[in-house]
Amino acid sequence: MDEKISNDYMSGMRLKDIKDKYNCSDKMVQNALKRCGIKRDRGRIRGSGDSDLTYSEDKNISKLYLSGMSSLKIASKLGRSKYAILQSLKRQSVSRRSTSEACRSLGIDETAFDELNEHSIYWIGFLLADGNVCQSRGSYLIQLALQKRDRNHIKNFRSFLHSQHALVKDRENYRISFSSKHIFYRLGHYGVVPNKSKITFAHKDVAGSRHFWRGVVDGDGSIYMSRDGCWNLSLVGSRSIVKQFVYFCQKLTKHRQSVQKHKTIYSVRYSGKSAISVIDYLYSNSCVSLQRKALLAKKVQNEFRTSS
Image 1: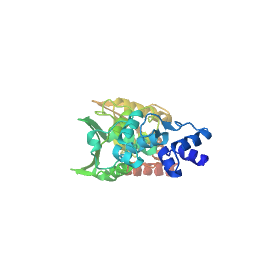
Image 2: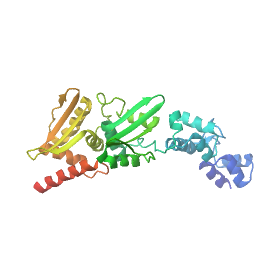
Image 3: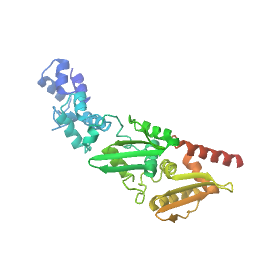
Image 4: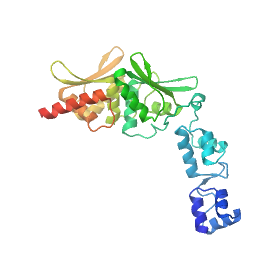
């Protein structure tokens, strides 16, 4: 009996549930834990309310909240009070949703950018190039608008977010927009900020990733063949972004390309073997990319391998 009680307690079961399960008193449970060398507060967070939350419950609360579940629904799911849930979020420094977000009826995965992987890094790069974020009156808006021909790419972005938001047709564009304070600040951490066109730069955690730069090139770059039959890769953007891209490409091209300025916009262009090297590195064996540029990259790779 002692071993069963201790195992249930350490797995996160509340004392009340343990008493009900074995039809015994508080004292019997406490003595069983004592005989097993387990202290009452082990694995639990004192002062968290509701006879103390377990550490696993505490961690699960933040995960559920960031996935979009309300504090009231979490309380109901875990059999805890709303006060205990809110105290847990406060203790873990989890940002509370704004009023507009709390009233949101459409689901979205707010943890989408919490972990850096190929997909999240790519979309950080793409949003840095083509996305739009703004903050106004307690609303934290994230928006992506693309041409009609790239409609499927917005669908891919929506799938990445596990979003239920509809695509809105606006003249010749399709767009998706939603409000999320958590995603707003996660993106801001990596350089996706309001009025980013002239001031943004790539955060060190993503600046060395080909997935990030593939996203940037898909948004603000071009792959094309010039009249002399030479493949080209160009990128436009802020001075910082273009210079960081040149630095990233230096290991592939063996030389540093010069950055050009036109009014307030900066650009860089690679041609011939340099362009082919960069394109091949960015797009080979990738899981996510803009389809029409991925097809051009495939064409570049096939022609290069045929001629080699």
